[in-house]
Length: 333
Image (cartoon, rainbow, N blue to C red; front, side, top):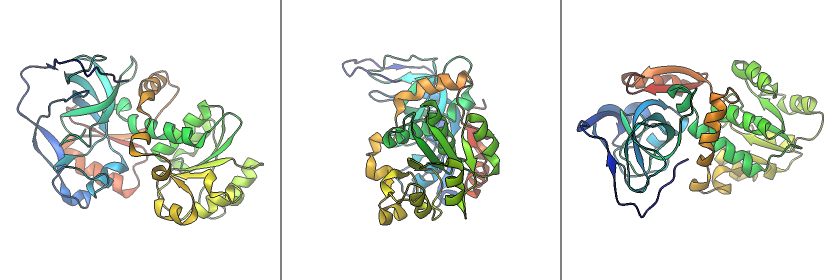
């Protein structure tokens, strides 16, 4: 994981870089299809404790479309694409754990930079080395899903003697959370559609469908009280049923998405339990990158796109039918 020494005064930059790059950016907030465009942008320089990479792959997330609508507002213009893998081509002051030419995965500095990972070059504020055996595309699928799911499993306090329900386990955060909980030795029940049911069972989860009758199906499958619920599904009105599954105690439910209903029902949420700085655990990126290289962890990739196909990727993502991570390849990897 990244580290830096603020006493360092040298910046190591690559030479002969062009003045501009292609980047998908927005200049005002609104619907993603209306405010995003692929344009020429200035190549950013890494500041203190930052690195710049030549982006080989950029994973897209629902959070990117939320940023377009004003989630985590900041200076404009700004870019999309939080999940990044690539080759370091410049390092900022104080960085001493990577060098130019190293392959890394990480999170784009969405708050401090005027472009994101959906660009030919990007500034990262959290990173880890890519281990041997892990390609750029699979690496770019990991950062946000790993860091967020791991942190929420920690907040719930999942242990080996617990039974956890992951609701919406077919989302990328859900799939990651199921695997993190199983690694801790917990019994995991997952609600998911047909797309990932077999894969979740192969991982070790017990799977049932969501929707009408879910409370009864989970109870029959569990055969005992469910200790806690992690809700990773899009808002669907399911929180009352999830509370019922944990014997009517809303504090045993943690949602990462349905904040409005949670406030009315007393359910825990990402933002009531954690500050923004605490909502992810980036220190585990290197560990889970190695797990992925070893075949012990996965975030499924549905499809890759050239950077100029970003709008097709957007349309598929917003349709809700991505069936896995969508990944841009800004430099034609």
